[in-house]
Image (tube, rainbow, N blue to C red; front, side, top):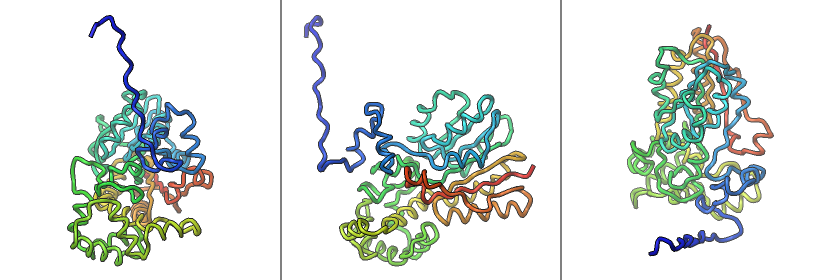
Length: 356
């Protein structure tokens, strides 16, 4: 090629078209995945009561800040950084002079959040780690934390991405690991767990009313062939409860039918795969040792099993003199937030204050 000749423009590649008037799959929502190119798309999706694909809407920010009251110069431990929504708000209140140490088991998430919050510089320190080992990340100068926040929910970006296997809404591999570099997948768990143990987990970790039916159906299905896809598991749970995808969809159009029949099964499996209860119990045990006098901790849970553990830990800490004040009742999201972010409906926030 003659170097003096102009370089032709790259060939335009048309995006893959989707059926119908609106994109349904995660990878088809090209506008939501590129909000910088489509101004107003985020506000439009939020106004419809949805969460834009590839994004996360932090829950109860105002309530979290009231409970924790972060102040300039303080040191904060954010146990579950996720997309950094709560993290950035905490940072803005502890500066100048303060800092946030953030943990998350999802290395992919940490990488994106680190880029997004780069403006905070050395005031923010992020680590790929479970909050079960929060004590290992105490400030290097030996100080303890003034504030601890743990949001136990899964980020919308993880739920919406079918390759992560967290959602019953889209087909994908049965993975569900927060850290995809280690540990057993949901597929491996389902291949080996005893049906009675699975039924107990469905009851304790997800309040599943048909725990025995679902566990029995999974046990029978895996004798025929391994369960590998989220779509397979969703159909199996529907059948165990007497539904098909079509009949459930029709019912949901007419009645306020509550969560999808498979929602609780997916929740329980995710908690099992990532040993979330073990991590929570360790954090609750260590929290009084990690907080300085007058330090505040808040935990946002999303089902009764988590909330019960937080409630009992804070109550027992109050009785033994470790905490001087605790939330009497869980704080819930208000009506305006629920209208714009329905995923906040199950959130319960509890707080405690370390004895001075």
